[in-house]
Image (cartoon, rainbow, N blue to C red; front, top):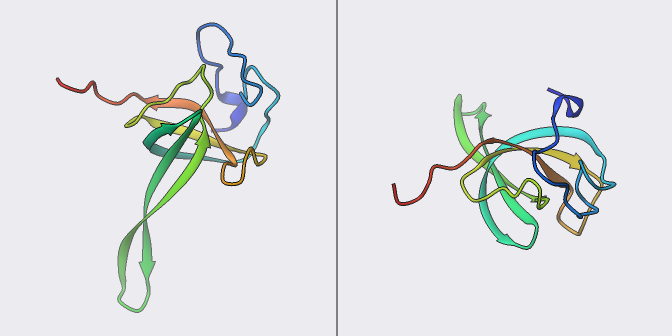
Length: 112
């Protein structure tokens, strides 16, 4: 999948200049998949990726995770528990160099 295959979100355009669809931010580099584990920051989410790493000495795999801060444009508005696609972009702040480009699966409703 490439960034050119991703459709802009439905609804009115947002006024965020760091939106890849309605602003001037360009997505280039890696496209990664993960789950939003925190949405407490303003327009930023933490995306966690779980993967297996092979340890040759023990001939086994160990579980690892990486937590990536990503910009969350208002037109996409990813929430905790959502599975999202994030794309690499220029550095937006000290820690943020990715942006949410698509929600692959919404989190299940709470309380049901």
